[in-house]
Length: 421
Image: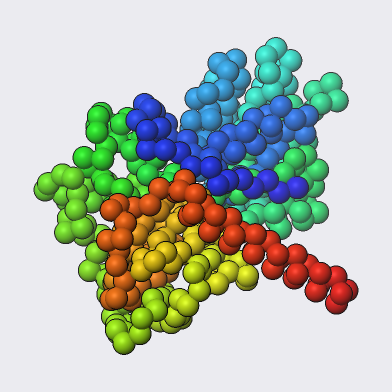
């Protein structure tokens, strides 16, 4: 069984960001905490946690250990290049014992006695092995011997294995059966969404004593940091700290960002270099680009255009940060309105996140790594005194029509597939 976090479509409001936090726990981390708790409560008691470098695995493990009950003996070891005697002596010491032994067998026998004693008098001790994928085969064999230890027909040691790459193939090998037989599942950490990045950064700044986090990083800068880090907490922290160390003024602006993983506002605008501005047609033009390469040029002749990853979208954008139904463009009189459909990673206009926005000629819509430039010189955004209210009846009716049309198309596709079958 493979456990993956369910990063849903619910979004936190900016007001929630002001809640104090000493440990910024986002949804994938919360799901990981639940999984680790299940590992310790299950009779089999072994679980595997995956996550790439900078995914925050060590921070998560440290916090998990701090929250364990005081009567639980815990040892955390780094498996990178770890020899068996070093691993065993480190575990024994963290369990509260100091011994002078020489051989692997002596260490192993001593640790077996400690494990049995701990299990009988308190609760089964916990062993966390980080970087299990970098451990010597001989050390893995010793770990299997520990996994096989029982007390009164029950396993005497809970084990959490942490790796930076998928390790299941090794565990499923015959020599690893003492661990594989006890494995309740594996959990794959997921990155932060754009909204979670904002919440995470502001919570981190709060924990550092910054009362007004937006005075350091604005919403649009947080969006760029999310893109630069891929949503991984460790990389996000490194980039954010580097930028803060170099900044001379706050809040940090585009001109203050000097980091190889970040793009400036000029870089974002440069994505659209070579995109010709068309002015001889009355209909709005939509030019879709990815890293400066033009993917599509679309004339918006209908009253609406659904944007998303789904094949039935009017503008199909295939990207990992794009929802199936991400956003919709609506033509109303001489205006084009962008409405975000509660997408997971949000929609941005000129680098600012929006829920709804009246677009102007040459506005740039950012959806994931893709850019959509509106060419509509004859458009008149001033027909709205301000951005439309998402609850406006006419607007809602248009969205309802779009969703109804999409549902009809989906049903048609299902019927076609059934006929083929």
